[in-house]
Length: 109
View 1: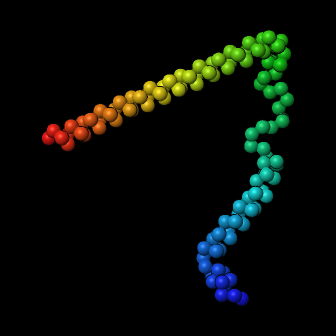
View 2: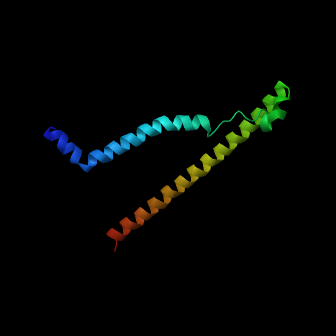
């Protein structure tokens, strides 16, 4: 055995790296199989589901329902954005006031 191989096999980091790579390889094989056996999101078991009533509506009523739901979601997203922007602006004002107070404390004791 060469000196390099002997040194490599005796180094603990080699065994840690080998274990991580082996674990990753086993995960790459098992995770897709597990997902196929037990899907984590979409299942085809429910035919119709809770939206069976929607399929019975005429196309124009389906469009009206879709638009109302999308408008409500858009309004919620806008309100979330607006609240986030207001909070960021308030935080910016607060930090500016704190910085001004700190500067005043330094130069006007």
